[in-house]
Every structure is written in C-alpha cells, then in structure tokens.
Picture 1 (cartoon, rainbow, N blue to C red):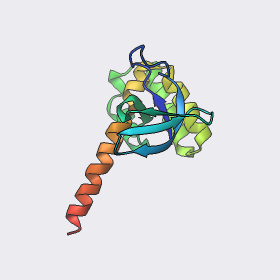
Picture 2 (cartoon, one colour):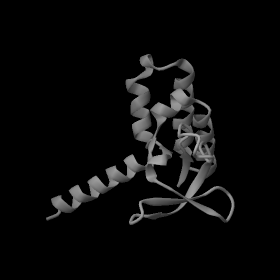
Picture 3 (spheres, rainbow, N blue to C red):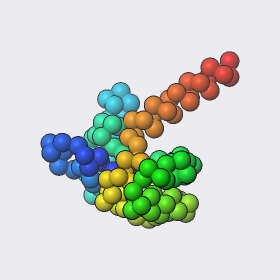
Picture 4 (cartoon, rainbow, N blue to C red):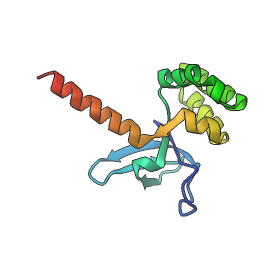
Amino acid sequence: MLVMVNPELSDNWPSRGLIGFIASIDEKRQAVMVGFGSLEMYAFPPEALMVIRAKQDLYKVLMDQPSGMETADFKVLMRVNLLQESGSQKDILKALEMLKESPGARSSGMETLQNVLDLKNTQSANQSFLSR
C-alpha cells in the first residue's frame, strides 16, 4: 500500500510529504515501516501517514460537498477518484502526487492510516461479536 508522510507535520519531520510503501506494521510498537525506493526502512506512527480515502468514500465526498469546495480541489478529487478505478500502483502514485500539491483536496480526499486501522479493528471486533 502506498502512503504519504503528512506534509503538514512539524519541521522536525524531514520526510514530510514523501510518498512511500508500507513494508510492515509492528502493532506492539505502534510503528509502520515505510520504504521510499531504497532498501532502508523508516518507522512512523500510523497517525503521521496518510492514505487516499476508499474510492466509494471519496465518491461520496464528491457528491455530498461539491458546492462547499473550491473548483480546483473538486477537479483534483475527481481525477484522483478516476485514477483509483484502475487500481494500478502507478495510478495511485499519480493520485498521491496530485494530492500532495493540493492541500484543499488533500484534506477532503485523504485520511490518516491510524483512522483506517482503527476502522478495520472496529469492524473486526464487530464481526467477532456478531458471529457468536
């Protein structure tokens, strides 16, 4: 999975805005190992990493909030949603690069990895409870 280091992190994070891939997740240390095209891996907390919203969620944002959004941001999000349809890593990388350059679109079209992991844990717990 491709991720972006949140570009809005403090200056203490020299890697902010970089796009990389998740190599592994260490749940005990609450660290995500990310590579940026080299053999070295870097540890990040999940709240420092951003992912593109699921395509159905992004589509819902596009349909629910078009009037409250800048036209340029809407166009970026529409392109991102179209790139998501192909599902190729090349297109997802293009989408992340577009979002990196557009703070308004980024705030609507991305969420932290922590939010995604929390949602999956909640769904998993609900599934376990319901299957009793």
